[in-house]
Structures are given as C-alpha cells and as structure tokens.
Image 1 (cartoon, rainbow, N blue to C red):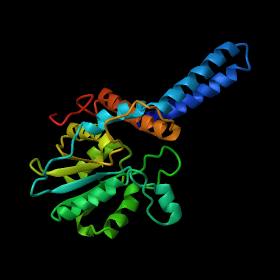
Image 2: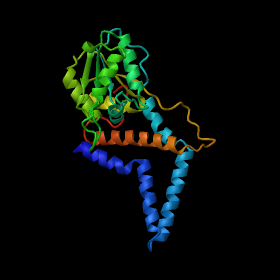
Image 3: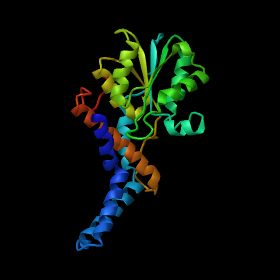
Image 4: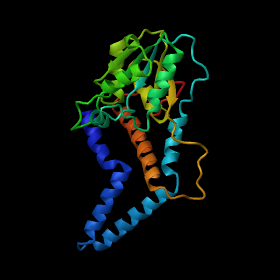
Length: 267
C-alpha cells in the first residue's frame, strides 16, 4: 500500500507535473465565469516557472542532501561487502535494445566496480527490482546488472543479486535478509550522494550499520544566485530530484522506516 500510494502521490505533486496541472487548470478557468481566477492562476504559474528556471532553488534544496554524508577519508583494510543500490539502469531500454542502458546515475555502477577491484575480498551485492507501478514490473534492474558487473570484471562467485526490492526500504530489508551480515562486518553502501541520507536511515532502522560511500554528485558548490540563468529543463530536473528526496525522508520518518527525519553521520 505504501509503495502504490507513494507512486500515485508523486505523479501529482512532482514540481514539474504540479506546475503543468495548475497551468491546465488555469487555462480551463479562462473559458468559464471564473476567468479572472484563471488569469491569476496562469500568471502565478508562469512567474513561479520563470523564477525556478532562473535561480538555483532546486540546487539549494539538493545541496544539503549531497553534503550530509562526506566521502570516507580512508577505507578499512578489510571490507566484507559492497552494496550497490539500484536506480542506475533503464530496464525497458535495456530489454528493447538488447544491451544494458544506464541513466545519469550510472556512477553507482562504475564506482561500485572500482571498489570491488580495490577490495577483492569483498562480496558485491546489487539490489534493485522494479520501481514501476504498472507496465514493466517484470523487468528487474538486477537482471541486467548481473551480466554488466560480470563483464566489468566482478567474479560471479562474489556477486549477489537482489531483484525483489521496489524502493529504498525494501533494498535494506531484503538485502540484509539475503546476505545476513555479521555485527562486526564492514559493508560499504554505494548510492548517489543526494540519496545517501534516506538510504543510511533505512539501513540503520533495519539494524544494519553500513559505511556510506556517496557517488554521483550533481552539484558544484558554491551555488551562484547571480547573475540568473535560464535553464528550464535542468532547473526543473534538479528541483524534482530534491523535492522527491525531501518528501521521501518525511514519508519514511512518518511511516517509521527511519529513526530520524534527516539522518546524520553520527547517527
């Protein structure tokens, strides 16, 4: 139920979608006796869209997420395992084209392989099923990640694939059940820096203290508020990314899937 509700709700409240829906509503009102309200709504949406495109509002929301967990200054001499979170593979495109297609979070895969080479003693776990609500649910990320990781040099006997997870909470719970980590074992968690606070929170709530290894940074601080630029696609993409994570943090906290709203390195 949580998974379905989160997908349906996000379809409506994603900033880009919400602005579009409000714009459509405003245009519809222009053809009714409420046309004055329609003009106001269309004007407000246009002004909000322009401001969001010109100034780094989304980046200002994303930066605290990316900076929450800094990269570890040094890794332990012995690493028992490396957990790579899904979200870097496009299953539908991979299936259609007959080859693995990565999205713009592909650094989760490439850095995961790099760490696997640095630590040949570690098990390598890729966790990712399908986050699709309707069509494409049968296409699992792990199905495509396995051959890719092997082709990139990860030995099959080191590789563990978890293909049932649909979200970050299930990544933590299902992976822990699959690999049964010992209390003193060192496991690296590889995911995008903006996604690390929520990821660490759910792993901790599942009783698994992992060592965060953030990758896939989206921003180059400091942010520049002046002069303004006009980047509609880039600004809205960053805003969607940031709002999705902040809403995810709040929803996971309310659902008891994390122990704190904004997990920190010190717990």
